[in-house]
Picture 1: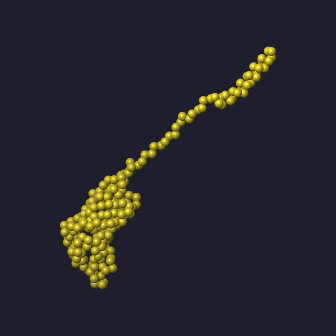
Picture 2: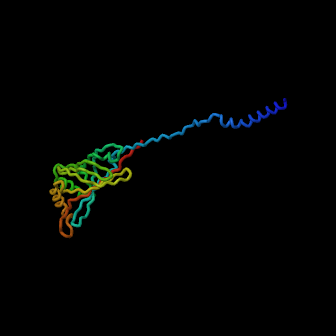
Picture 3: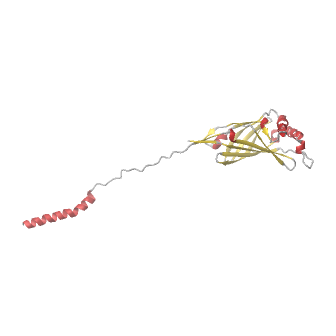
Length: 219
């Protein structure tokens, strides 16, 4: 009887030892991963654009002679009232400009006074060419130009490279009722405007290009 009891106890111990791994595997509390994924906060950069007069160039090309020889020039002074905007085109849309005609520069000291005094001097109250950028975006621009007391709207082509915006258009002097000015410049510049064919010719169409590089401030 004693031996039987001892054997029974041994069997129970062995059974308990055999079940121990199973109990530990199934009965233990499930561990949880308390760590959380960190999400990096993305801060969006906000940039503001503004007009810089020192980075603006206006050039024009007029034409003389029957073979339409180009005469290039610019204005040394351009006064612009522009906006500050998070949109590049918002800086120029609605901007107004004033160009004193006395600042005309054709790279010829003899010709410049003739343009100023005879061409612009024959116009009505035109100490300055004024106007407004009615609208502008990457597809084009609409500008209003006032000269000789007449305001005319023109469409312009627009190109963009980084912060630089360039607009090209062609105006017609006759749109501003300025035949008198055409005649006046033709008279004082007759020698330069007369070709081998003996024809004194000054064309009424003028190409105009404006290029400006905007200031960019990002925070």
